[in-house]
Length: 81
Image (cartoon, rainbow, N blue to C red):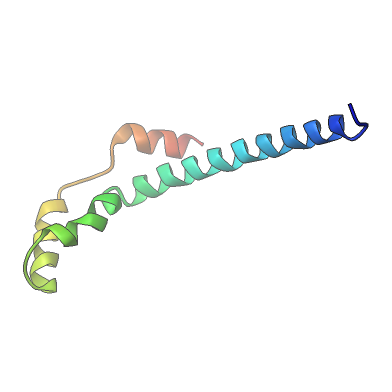
């Protein structure tokens, strides 16, 4: 085994650990975003499903989402961090 292989293996471990940290940060940010804007992911596809003018779609969206709030368990996890 060449001398540099153990060094490469250690570097790969460090990169994988950094990737895991970044993925965890992304997941945490996504949870916090959904807690702040709970219907954002639904609204992204909503306009394509609703017929009518932009104003009519807006009114339909307001009626649909007016009473919605974030799932408590998601908010609790996001605020606990």
